[in-house]
Image (tube, rainbow over all chains, first blue to last red; front, side, top):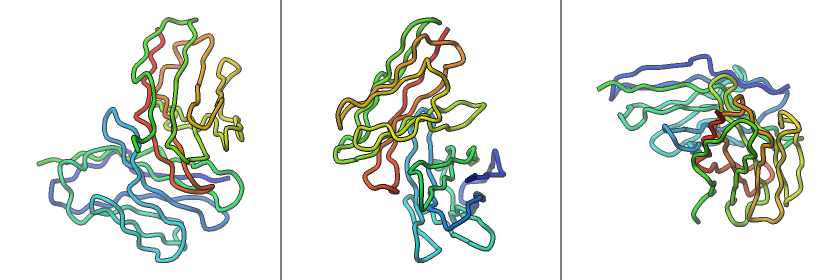
Length: 114
Length: 113
């Protein structure tokens, strides 16, 4: 069965510092992978997605993520964090065959300190 | 496009009352999803539709929950009767392609007292 693990519940970084949020998945084939961001009181917004091809994908707001098949990981990175990046981040996996639903991780809450 | 629209944004009701949540997907999107988000269980898929037809409702917690999509531009999620443990944020999302990204609405925060 598919599953997504985000091992870090809460991360605190200083503004301007680099960021890496971890995501590991369990799926028998190459999945579709997504990162979403949720600001307080808001819905989820898509940051980036991986379907196939180049394993390093660029997203909005300066985020990027790298798909590593050998590690079953899809970590999210940003070289310099801004205070406005404080939010909850969700990794999600979709199946390449079968159902059309996404499986979400439990999320990582990012706090940015000045 | 205005994005996915949900109403109401907030709902406070008493236990035993009927609650109806509404969703308007993005025009042209053939897939519609209902999710529930709680601190304890995170984001859970309740049900999804393809071309107005329910495809997978295995996430619907109980018979008290029902969802309909009478046309391509409108869906409802109904809870009858509501219970305090139904308190959560309910999201609607839509997508265009069979495995495309999902676009989420702002959510409805439901509080059942």
